[in-house]
Image 1 (tube, helix red, strand yellow):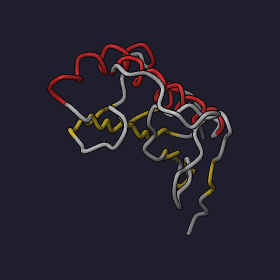
Image 2 (cartoon, rainbow, N blue to C red):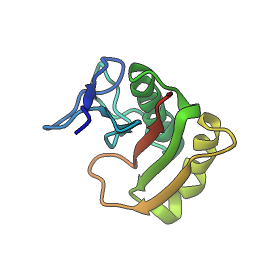
Image 3 (cartoon, rainbow, N blue to C red):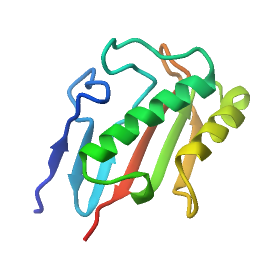
Image 4 (cartoon, rainbow, N blue to C red):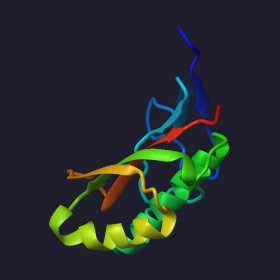
Length: 128
């Protein structure tokens, strides 16, 4: 069995439970679901989907960097929106500021989120 390595950075919110910010395993880096939390104050950043998506992706970029990769390595994302119909367009616009072609594959679903509008997790390919 190949080893897995936990990734932790103070530049993104600390886990609120028994899980890692990310794990490197089997040639990939997998992040936990991350929301729009300020890593220092632990408060939700923003009231709009655009503000919250930007903070969420900023947190995820910090985790990717701590794991030795960047947004160009991301192959898959899962986006959870509290209100899929209302917030998809705003999330999608900000998401496009962080990723370029070829875009990662993405699944976007409506979810019951407590206290914020968006949560995203990523899978990134590690360099050989």
